[in-house]
Length: 418
Image (cartoon, rainbow, N blue to C red; front, side):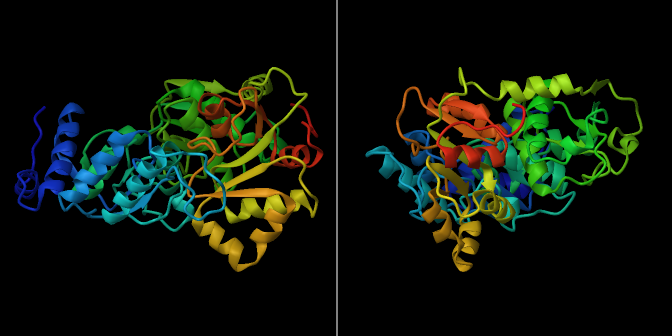
């Protein structure tokens, strides 16, 4: 299938609006050809993951776009960077990497991107409307945008995300197309206790199980009686996108494209039905812990995706004025940090021993102490998936309440069954 570019798109690719825009349009067009897309789609926004420093090539790429006069054509928010520009936490990144990371973040500012620096832009006011086409990067942001907001995006990686933002276009394929957004399988949780589905710990566990079971397919979760809340769906999607390659899920009666099971499936029968049992859930929860034993702990980390203001409410309630004996890292965006500062809440948290991390998180840049045998406790399915490889710390997965209790006691504490 050949790619059909409009006259305007060909003109941009030929350099009529500058070298930077031409480079971006050519990248988008070539990606579309490789993906067998027949055309490019206009997009209304982007969320950019490419501003996280992974090496000098990313910095040089962004600076070349800047030098070519490129600017984003649509609203573009930024995912986490490698530095805490708000100065809340100490990043152990040394020169020359530190300087290159700062140059990278500055280049994206010069391209016209919003300085959001969060993996949860949808909780910072960036919420494209249902049915609109966007180009979002960062796996949890992508899955939330598709599933909970009903906007349409593929999983755009570095550096196709910024190229789409500058071109104002994306390849017309994948999850941009309505027929590819229909569920093909059912993930049935109706046999699970209602109390479990209403708990905070359920959704990262179910998301991790879902991702492993469905891979990159589109499924519909059936059997959830009440809306679990945005933070629960955020946790589910993040875990599913980490353990699998999920870009879109539906929850029957809750997410916008699944008012009924029949509509989620497009009126046809599912190719498969996964009936989730208590044993499957227990195995999924156990798999999130990688530590050899639960007899020691070095740190606690929460906030992947970034903590919302409501999640800080829950954290404060769990701490209840006590002092922590172990470091507890609470990762969040500057939009939440501003609210904590406005209400005078940040100081009380820090006085209790909480280290707030803004603009970044502990699994993408060196913030945790450098320990070859460290053990980290978390309530995040995404942290549990990435922490061993990215930080070297083994993981203990637990509820938020157990994370806080463990940080207070200075040792692992599980109030319920692991």
